[in-house]
Each structure stands twice: as structure tokens, then as C-alpha cells.
Image (cartoon, rainbow, N blue to C red; front, side, top):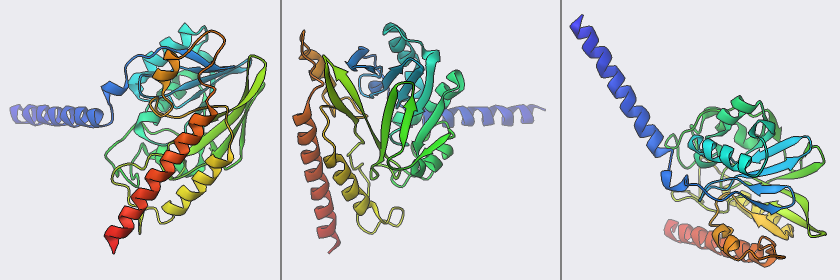
Length: 289
């Protein structure tokens, strides 16, 4: 009996150790600090953390929540939504722009708590369903709670809720089903195209040349840049707050001005991103020779 108890105890210790290791690898506390919830433009509000951008899009028929971050981000997101005067329970649609742990880990929990339907690009649906297993860059290193996609989006699909229409574009590269969303919002009587731009980061360890796990990765990136360059947003954001300089924008906020109106910033972001991608591809081609 003592032997059995010892073995059982050892199993529990090993399981707890593995669980803690897995959690630490798929969670970054430094990316999960509170941030000030605020209006971006019109019905679009920032409700994310210091590093991870989550957006609440409000309508009279309920709300859309985009990229809710880690599971550990959920209490912060709830507080932010309530601070803005809205109800967490009124979330009707969840959107995901990329099937990575830092933008997808909270989806299963929020879906369960609110009954919201999850929409994501069809090419990311298998990765979301597997909880991150088999990622073409990370393998099984960065896992998250598996979640089922209720609506598998295709390029050009429109998400509608109440008076809102949001168009989805398939902009792969960062993940195979990475997405960009855009809509129109009014600020001080003027209409602006608002773009929730896909991540243009090529993660460390990504193989661009002769990648058996993603043979068409370079052509996908080229297609993505063409789509992003075809858009003309007055307002743009992305999945990480540093990409669109959220801290700087809030510091520059003045009465009568919205620093999120930043069309030149979008062009500069794309140009710099394209340069980085071209340099990485060139380096890999040179090394291969």
C-alpha cells in the first residue's frame, strides 16, 4: 500500500511540475499588466493589456471581442469592459486574427462564459482546435486551451452584428490563417476606414526558403503585403500595442484631436515591415548558396 501511495504521489508531483512548466512557457506576465481602457474611434474600444491589444466593438445587438489574449488576461478584460460601461456578458462574437497562445488562449474560456460564437480564418481553425499543437514554427512549445471555430472565414467574408459590418481578409504568413479586419467608423462627423492589421512579424525560427511545413510561405507573405498595401486606413491598430505605439498615442491625446487617426503611420509601418521581410529572405537565400 505504501508503495502504491508513493507512486501515486510521484505521479501527482510530476504532473504538477509539467503543468507549471507548460503554463510558464505559454504565459508572459510582463505582457499581462493592466492598461487603461479607452475609446479608439466610434464604437471601437481598447480593452487589452499593456502588450496585447484586445478590442471591443460595440453594437445595439451585442458586442464583438477581438483577440482576448491569455487566459490570465480575462479578469483584466472584464474590468476594462465594465469600466467603459459595457457588459462582458453581451459579447456575441469572438474574433481571432492569429492562432497563437498570446492572442487565442482566452478564447475557450470566454466562449464558455458568454456563449459567444468564434469566427476565425479557415486555415487557422485546425490549429485553434488543437490548442497550438503542430504550429509550423513553434511545434508543440506554446500551447493553449483548444477551441472550436464556429464560423470558418474565407477571404472577403463579412461579419455582421447589429449595425456593424466588418470585412475579413485572409492575410497569411505569421500564421497560415492570419486575418486582417476592416470597417468604417465616424469621428467628429468624418468617416474613416479602420484596419485591424495582421501581424507582419516573421517569428524567430521561421524558415522562409524550402519550408516543408509551409511550402508557400513566401508567396503568402507577398500576397499579404499586397492586400495590406491596398487598404487606406485613417485609423489602424494591430495585435501588439507597441506596433501602433499605443502608449505614445495616449500621451499625445488632446481635446479635439484623435491620435489614432494616423494614415502616414500605417504606410511607414508597412514599408519598414516589408524591408525587414526582404532582408530576412535575402539573408536566407545567401546562406543557402
